[in-house]
Image (tube, rainbow, N blue to C red; front, side, top):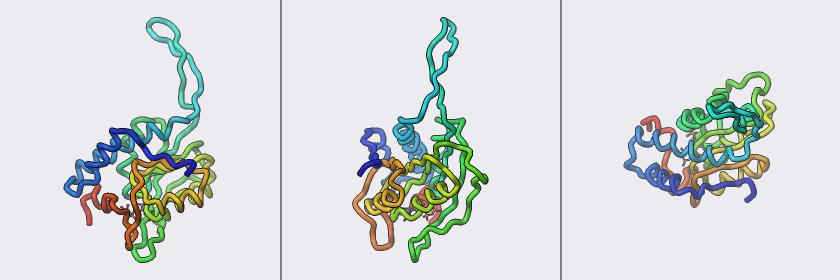
Length: 208
Ligand code: PRP
Ligand code: URA
């Protein structure tokens, strides 16, 4: 599928294996989410625009380049919170805009409860951060919100996706690049990714 990038990086695969392990405790789980997010961001930002510049070194002038566009990191509460800090450290000039959604357990539809976007867009590229792409409802709703806000270029970064979630997001928003650490087998009857890693929010925050 066009626009869908599954990481083949050995470090991502190694860390993801420990992340999935049911014995991995919340502290280690949070560290891994952060580290995998940084590695995925490296891949997802490969096409960001650069503005050429010159820098003065102790030995003379060197050609250089700065990021040209303003980037917005959009973590989806709660589970996306664990992905934002590390990525932000890599791009400290980014703005961070939180969106709060939870999945209604009965309908599996996303319910929005928080949105602190400013009235008009302040960034050129938005990167949505949410580890789990299950039915795809939350990711599609987040992109809907960003597009209504006026966001021009949107990328989605997640850790594990079900094929159903990729299809839903891609069908609704074919212009959105999807960067993911792994695409799993399927969703189970209650909308969880199999084999997945369980509940990403609960495992980060020690709840559930
Ligand atoms: C999880 C996850 C996604 C959503 C994915 O959040 O972080 O936002 O489910 O499911 P979907 O693709 O079927 O929409 P959850 O609703 O569990 O909220 P939480 O992060 O606050 O625990
Ligand atoms: N949300 C999660 O945290 N895990 C899943 O498998 C599906 C949705």
